[in-house]
Image (cartoon, rainbow, N blue to C red; front, side, top):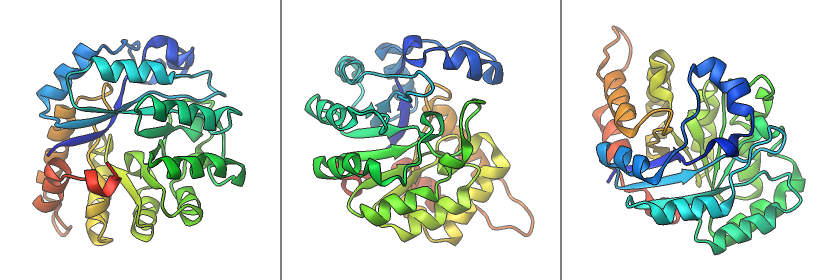
Length: 277
């Protein structure tokens, strides 16, 4: 079963001016609004059986993806899609937004501390974590790099997730992108904490980093904590699958290889029960 845990459904208005001002100069193209039809076509091309979809909300960056938009997007898709709300935990109404999203059938939360400029270890955010745990929601963190000059990278280190997991051990959490470029920190966090996982989205796009990260996952014994993610629409699921297989096929003399078992786990594993779905 192929589960893609990292896809986006956002319109230009949800970005505010963030894409045009800070991301477009790096990526070199304008944002194209995502339709359910285009989304379904990409998921079908990649053979995706189940996907997680979300937007981004970060008050400091002026970004906001409403719960009702994601719920409607999911309703219009033919793909088997699990909708996630996008919440900024520093918003005074964050817990109410969580409850609203859960009432709309959304099963997780996407948070973006690097652009929201908040420290996820702040105990003032515990009410949100407690509400998420009680509601059985998955909390997916954008961790790692950002091309935006307004972002604060120190807040995006995956080691911070360890403190959240220590205080809230029953909360299911996913560290996005293997926490790149802090993949080693991600490995020790997911090894230590039973309900913390990491997706591999975008890891293949930098093959040297991606190769080392997947080898480290084998060496640390955390392959079972890894999840497939495409980062659609930045890349399609098919591009991500092809990229992962390409770096796994590389052979570096004197270095370990990426096992077929790891690739099979990412592309064929059924992770629903472990994630509480």
